[in-house]
Image (cartoon, rainbow, N blue to C red; front, top):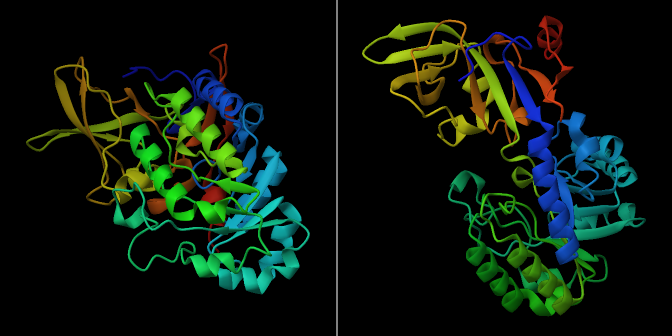
Length: 370
């Protein structure tokens, strides 16, 4: 806890460039040892104010929509991969104009748009029908999944029109042996098909920048996969790119005691950390000290609760609290629920100074609707 009002007005997201660089250093090490290329998954993190730093250690971006695709091309550079669960007729020509590779989710989409995408590399999403996701909501291998093709006859029929596939089946996977074992399974089940391709993307969800992760083992396994099938391997890290780099800085507005001490802050988990609410996870809050509080948001939602925290002294109105890991699937999902003030976006530079990258005001709230 920081009991200070110094710095920008809360709430604000604070990206630390030094911490970001630590992740980028691991990214560069993985690229060099494995030969794989790494593309930032914009669905997870799209705060382009730090793209200049990330682009030095990554090969480009991958997207899930036309707007993400355009942002990657305009603000990040490098290779730009276009993916969407379904492209619309009015989107496809612009998408092809921004992309180096376009990955179709289904054979139906490939059939429909292959000719219009003939000028760039084309691929399909391959669904191996298993994943590491513990949440049905995020499981691409769930029953009746619409995400990708798995029938070998259908995949083989596309070989004259595609040069690669994307296989996204990991989700917050910190377990290297699990990753390696599932890659063994992909090799066994799809190897004959993969060896006819030029490139294979293994998607994101591999937590290889986490503390203690056997990065060299991962790199060597990727190198072996690439050599065996003669393909360029791609990874699409999202969370791994920015994990541990960003906080949501909030201030205490009120303290209640209704049988439990509750600190109401100038933010909202539904508006500013929605992914945690969706998956019913607590925010990463201070846990050192004997003074326990529930940290709650200021919206009218009864369940607008960040979680329980512990501090080394009693909280007071005006104290500042840092909520950890507030970048991945967080900043991209922020919203104007209740008209709660949108957090500014700030960057802590390597010398410790804080740069205010973007602020939001009433006009932004008003103009978000009509």
